[in-house]
Length: 224
Image (tube, rainbow, N blue to C red; front, top):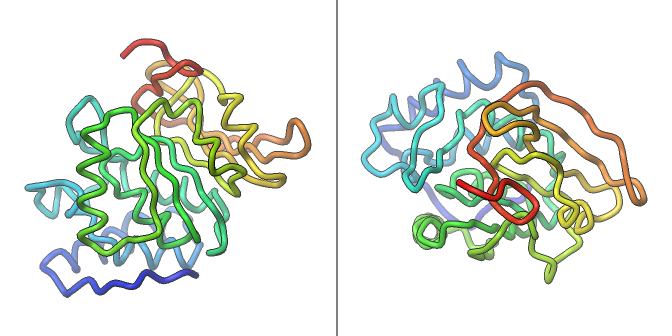
């Protein structure tokens, strides 16, 4: 798996990260070695200013302002593992948010392109990720339901907000055999789907219920 040219010094949150992985991630069936390793190293607390270890590494989502959240660690692990990364992929992330999911993707992919509707969150996430030494990421503020066609096709796409359907633009920007991981359903409750492109369409794997903030855009929800 791709490594990042950086060094995270030992910190007082190391034990909390270890407990998070040992109690929340592995026992629930996450098996990907690189996902487990990355979640054990990525400093989640750095993406939540002022967070205690219970806040940052607890088994729950957290608000990051602007009506957005950082997802429960287990849900992050499930979605990341479902992408099937091997370290060589170009990945598109819709919903940069705090940048924590972006950091994990940067550990597991060759290049990450991330799009966030809230421009201020893009600035905050970029500053944090640059400070931590992640260099294989490009950022864009805009409507994530339209993707980022300039860099397509992508080997995998992850959407960290719930929409009423899989956006056509994202399906079109997938490479053949690529995976799109996204929560789809109503405004409050969704189902996590993994779509694999096979020609013009492809199979969908259903991974259970979930609850995400709304995906706002021309091919998502039209209001906040």
